[in-house]
Image 1 (cartoon, helix red, strand yellow):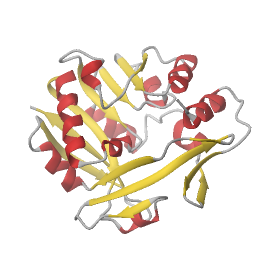
Image 2 (image 1 turned 120 degrees about the vertical axis):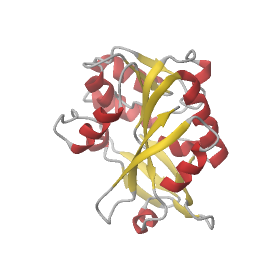
Image 3 (image 1 turned 90 degrees about the horizontal axis):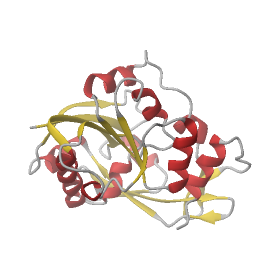
Image 4 (image 1 turned 90 degrees about the vertical axis):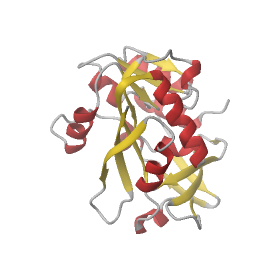
Length: 239
């Protein structure tokens, strides 16, 4: 399996990244900000950290954990299991000190974890959009309910296509359905091109809609304050 994204982050973690990691959509190409997005330490005084700490508890499952920035922070407070589909990223997390770095697919949680395993879940990085449809999102939420205990919480994030800034995203594709859009892009590193990724963008209202047939409820949404961003985080609770 080609994995230029994972290889680039592993090389960066080892101080061996000699070429940029690129995102592309057809002829349009942008350098992906690896250091800014995935490395460094979470600031305990940051507003985002305070929001996460308000909603997360252990045992925690960190889905799409990258190189473990957040897992390294939260494992000092409670048990944290960091999940990544990329073998290179699992290796990077292990080398960076993540205590429980697990290879797994966040869209196949019931194959990897038993019922009621976690008290909370965290998925930062908008990979929720890889569910690709509202039905896929409902399926993910149903599986997440299986592996979390009664009263569990989750923090998920996405891009809100109802905000004007969404159209500036690389690979943005408009959808005529209100509250939905798509994003199509590829990663390239050292000449290796990954398969095309299709993300579905869900507005907070569409996320609420997807929760209806599941045990999850959207409790609050923390949206970007800047008009230049369409990013938001949603805190969910499980009945």
